[in-house]
Image (tube, rainbow, N blue to C red; front, side):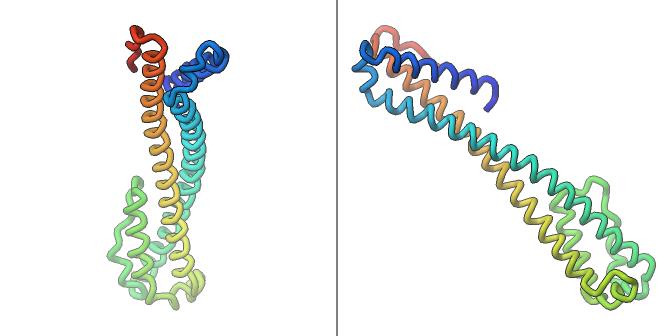
Length: 195
């Protein structure tokens, strides 16, 4: 939650406490459906705030992991390009791939790496002969899969964080409407509170 939303939640919790502390004097108000809805909305905002924080922390951690995998994948692709350049007659297909730019995004890196892995598939014997191991392409594909999974996981966490932020905003608006309704029930002439 941002600072303004935390402030709003604090004010709403104070209103809730006021209603609780004055339960005898405000019995009818506390029995109104708007009061129960206010309580539920305040609880919901707290839930979404925790979810937003949890998803944000997960997204940050996954960003670090994704960036590490991005760097590892670029390194492995550099090794693949090095052998293709050193042995152009042995690995002619890979000569068509240009070097990656420094600012290659995740999608472009995935497509490039997949193309390189597909192009390298027929040359497993060359990789084994040069000391990369017969399973070099398989390891490259596993790294691509791990990278793709982390990109998707990070995206999911970012979407959860966004959903939580939207839910907080929606629930806060509804809570203020319940406050307005409770004010109107308490004193019909004071129903002017608007968010």
